[in-house]
Length: 234
Image (tube, rainbow, N blue to C red):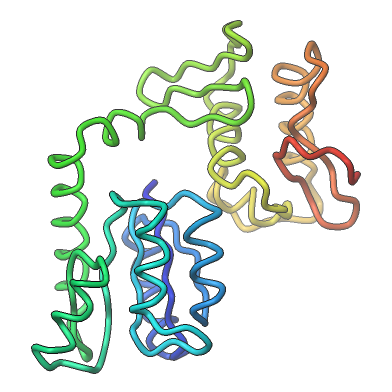
């Protein structure tokens, strides 16, 4: 599942875009100001960033420039009510790959995202290949081969365990509550009467953590689970 960062302070527009993208099988993180957009864009891995120009605290042009310093390859689509040629040039000069004026048709947004993804893979074949491999510490997961290794040792997982691991790695350093895990991995509304999430997390721990000194899956009491190399807080 492709992961998108959406930076938009207009609640109505953001809710509409987020819902539409999630219904189109994208995973979406939504932030409402430029400062948080920079933090997310630099700290987490996304496939595409959708960036509004008129953001509070730090505008979209500056956000784009800051992210481009670290990541020159990630596709960035800018959204704005400013539709002048000068504004478009300013956005592209800041490092944006495309520029979509408001209001826009949602189908056009989807088409732009597909085009940006194709272009990114053609221009950066190394990045396209790298997207098949995700990792944390010495744990490496090959998405296309469905292979998992830790410190070079192959680990056999069931299909559901593999999906759970992928979800954890793609959201590393983020606390994930049981409802979110159940929704994303099992595609069900979380039922507080079942402990399926806890059971499968335990299965996964026994396979990827039990025989290794450094533990990666941690419990945050009352909150859920987190995959991280920082185990200072339990």
